Length: 424
Image (tube, rainbow, N blue to C red; front, top):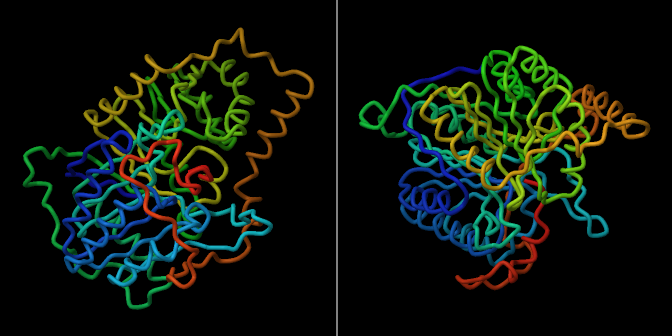
């Protein structure tokens, strides 16, 4: 059951430059527990720094549990993970599968969350993976993204959910924490505000539509403005219907989408919606500076969300996702300010005169796509008919290692695994 809790201290972080130092520092200071879930973990400069932070936490006596995705992080080598295993870190992979003719077949239902919980006191959540491509110096292909660090009661909800996922393969772990670990008291923090926060996930069983439902409820209540900045935008029919109804009520709707996509089909899919959205009065902006990877939204300057969930069929119907939803004018204003700067400095508004009306086969494609999206959540259940395992990674089952990258590695010297980065 989704619920709002108040009394939190939180901070917004933009890109790896702000995120990585904060999360690595928190992990290094851990004394009791680190829970980490990520879609991508590469053996590059960032990946090695994460490993060192986890080793330091384990050396401090903390129990460290790491979950990666078998599709997004398939190349963790034996030499890379061996020190972690020796230090007592429990490292697991979600549905690791062998390649078939060099192709990874486990493309459906991926563990796409990006969550870190430290000592039950502080959590990090957003869309940033542990790879060099989230730093500006990676080059023109570096990603634009956001994350939150938060302290307060919602951290208990996040920790409990992570433990429940691990309990499916670790019978000795409680499904609900019997007692809270020592945590920071938000009420004692002079910067704390009555921030209302809700943690929502999309998973295989109990929460298949929670994130989409939170979006749709907020859109339904919108009275002035909806700002959505999302990397992969091709939502279900019901989601688009709520946006159209909001537009008819006089709500201003602005969408920030990829202009320089990391995957060509992403922009093609979104562009099939342009004609319809412009007809409905939406303002569409394409971000051109570099690939946009964010998954954020602001409504009426008071409601906001940051997380891992895209607004596309995979995130809404198949992937395992996690978002924070917040009701706080100060935070929403800060996030909107960052998006406004992107619009002003690096976006091009889609001009109606340059978008051809979709007639003939293009119009037919759009109609078919809409109807497929309308039914996709139900059809998608047939795409994954087996339960995806969480398998423990061990050095003897991992591939051979590559040498650690030098600290000044440039984008042109990125590890091969980086260049095979999946949409994440």
